[in-house]
Length: 341
Ligand SMILES: [Fe+2]
Image (cartoon, rainbow, N blue to C red):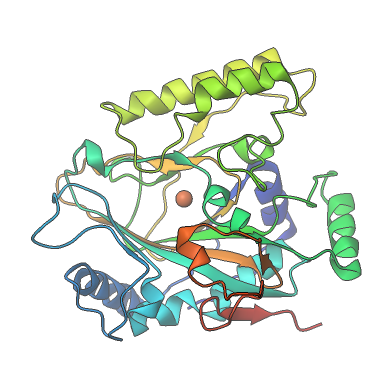
């Protein structure tokens, strides 16, 4: 694993645009490790879990599932030690600490093993969604003097961005095959993180729901958000979604701090390199339409290591909340990086 040092301009780009293509160096430079991960992916989807522990979610099974469907396993780090060595690495954890100085330590909330085989069908798409809908709203960060001070300093330094909400988690997405539009790279709706405040809500749009007009316009588009999309033509659905979003922005530009409309970005990511995105960033991906190129990726969702459970977390995470306590157990949400100073 490579220790990546983010620059000031990397941070500025991330805060402004909601994502970052880390192009200075690969996060995983060792081709042997990349190949090992691919081999363990294959074993996991066959149900061969080297630690003997089942993952939290297992969405594709060899010999049973439709071959073209996106293969996904969540929290494979519990099930396989090679995957664990990467997911729990301090090199990944440090990326959270570098982006958010108000995090004194970093925990892994969840990993995501994702595999799209060549010539995947319409089921090879992942619909637009924001990760905070699944992750951040399970937790809340305590307000401490230290955090408040760090957030204020960060806001003063970076164009007055508001870090007081929406800064509890990030996602690091590592390509294990060269990824681009053809094989269904992760795609972003640029700067959408500025609009999609999801704190303590399910699919409501916190920032935009300040007026009835916003609420109504959002009702129109919010049902389009779905990780497991059933759309017949998902690409068209995504374009419709962004057009509807731009309509809302256009109508309300006087009350929004947005100076331009949204567009879709599909970066090229060589194997071993990573993308990082904001918890409120709209993202998804297209099918793998290449004839022979696989598209495997490992995503790691990091959270502020000091967060506590909300009172009533939902099913997946709620299984790890102990009765009468809001503390996160290290065994389930390991701390992978701690600030030194
Ligand atoms: Fe996601």
